[in-house]
Length: 550
Image 1 (cartoon, helix red, strand yellow):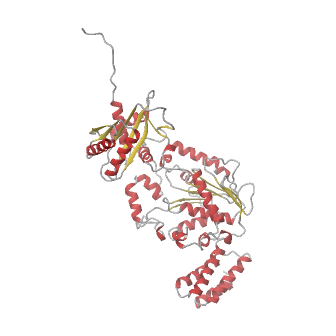
Image 2 (image 1 turned 180 degrees about the horizontal axis):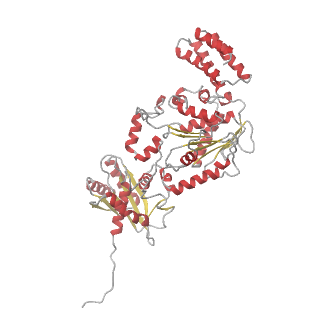
Image 3 (image 1 turned 90 degrees about the vertical axis):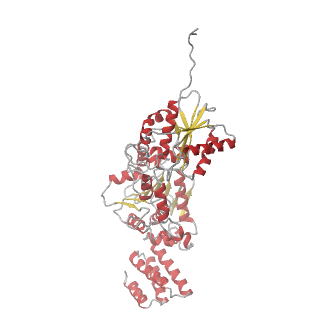
């Protein structure tokens, strides 16, 4: 710290209500920065002094207005070197509850330290960030990206994700940060002004538009060769390369994603480029896991994982100000209602390895479209909901003339209250034109069958509702039926159902079922075992000509 700044800070500590001393301090810092001084420690001390004065509560309206402006100016000056100051200065004129960084600042201080290290340490090469969904990891890393762009607008950078939808959102958010007047980007980086943008290319340039834009956003499997580059010191930012659990459960799809990332993105880096990878850690063999395993123990590689709940206190790590986060009760509820391995991956950042997987996504036959015409048979089975966290699962199987396959055209998988589930069962049967529905009659299953049958009659739906008691061991039943399911059933392609839909939940239960581990939700594979039992045992009567016996 220079001697004059130290003297003024000393005078303020001796007489904290001397507004003139604060004016001198701010004027000096503005002059020093104009002369090229860039000592962050001095600015940090000045910011602390002004912040203490504001918190003290002694200032009248006029003095408080000046102190607020002084803090704004100091954060703006320091924003070129410090991410925390940059994030505060960017949103200083916005209402407190609408800000991205400040309400989350206390809980995300660890993220600040890692981003600061990643950007400013010459030895930094790699940083991965794993946090629960909707906790601000991607938005704050987007903010970090534009901070980096302002510090070095001359080199190209690349952001990639699993889909165009995600990269488009990233492009729009970053563009808003650097060009929207509600953010103070040009005050912090007056030389890094927006000079070119293309929504079609999802790219923009600051200061100067060259052969490669300052920032380009493209999906990992999009067209990248020849169109992008990650310049010296630039960032390769990969956010959520793995779409969901089902993709994570497929070794083939994981390998394809890794190869696409390496061949389309990783090889676009020039010497000195850095790699930021953000996302849910679904599997130890996902791109983050593979990259970290290759460089484990190296000083330039950092891994940041913030779990939903503090392992020591059990408190939420994301209970932000203004109600924009999630409290302990929320995460405990998610833990109760989510498969253990899925919760560990999404909310604790602990990737899993599935051993003894019965139905891998690669082993299931898929369809993109159904055969033409009407099916000759449409059947369903219902694994009724038990107590607690059980799901009611009902696959709907249809068969077309000339095909020996059963197409799983619909799959109800719901753990709502019994009354709601029963209504959904009736609606699903009616919607798909189910001709025969067999209900497991164990426990309350018989009553469910009766209730659904009454609903169908009221709707005028013709469907034969049957009941069947299931006495065999569930695990044995699922195992024995699996080969029949793999050989005879065709499921929707993942592109034909929305994430979080009943079909998606059912497929998640199918592909996560293991033989040598605990399965929290096995309702969908159990329902498929019931379907296999129903269809493999059914026989059609055959007419055969014989000699008359008389």
